[in-house]
Image (cartoon, rainbow, N blue to C red; front, side):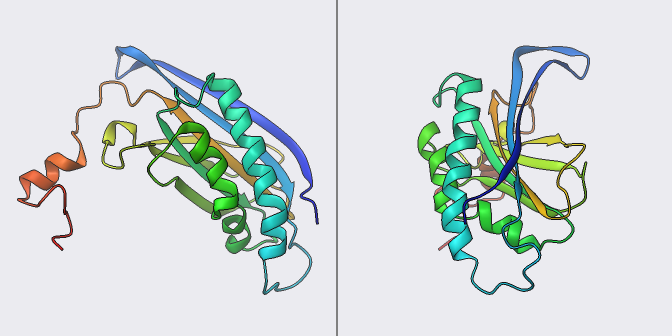
Length: 200
């Protein structure tokens, strides 16, 4: 079954001043979303989600990746990245998860931006205008806290009860005036091996 896309959207947010102080370089946040018909809605409990995942996830991954890259200008310019899905009230959290937690979705974005780290994610359930939270992290360095960011947005008419909102997010830059250090400094302070934080 082909995925049914009702609408798409793109949001760009630029932060010039944070904490009353001008940013040395503006932080730019990009989010792209697609509102789709939940392919499992109204069918009772569906045991095997794979056919719809295989049909829908690549279409959404390719579409949303192109929207982000076109807006940013190049994959190389993307510094932080993440993904999210919100399923309507007639769906399961598993339905939201199904469309974004597959390499058939994420690899389009990962390859386009040349990323090494995993895609930060959020999957929730809610009504129309529910918060869409897209957590971000540095695409190459999971410990770089300056790029721990969250894009928050919403869509007034989505998701409907039988829909899913699927979204990708990107940052160009990190938090202005970030000053909490990186994860590696904590590990050093705690006497742990930065290269082997689990001690194994």
